[in-house]
Length: 151
Image (cartoon, rainbow, N blue to C red; front, top):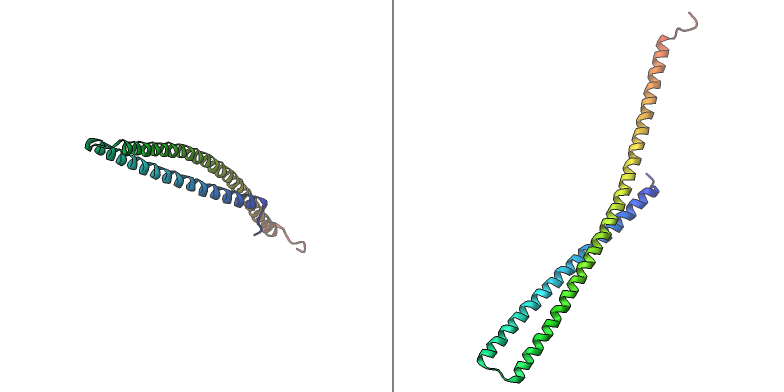
């Protein structure tokens, strides 16, 4: 069976939807990775802050205190950047989700058109079959009810 333009459009729409789905899945995986990084940074910062508390209780020199504070500040900056990256990635996921939905709606539209076309073809075939059946019945009736002219 030859492919129609609608078949081609449907296939292209399916490929676009699938690509959009792959991108969405990738964006969601990135969210998971960023969340894992953020949680790791938070744990590391908490551990380092706990080490500072121990050092403060045991007594710490000013230079070491300054190093602890600088490192904690750099961890805080890293946490801020990670949270910003997470927010940005959530925006990407939302955009990818909308794009996937749009592609899915387009594919559904083409599928609906294809179903309507198939229904119309089935109805046309049923009408042809009914016409053929009606014609056969009519011919049989005429043969039975027609008196031959030689009698």
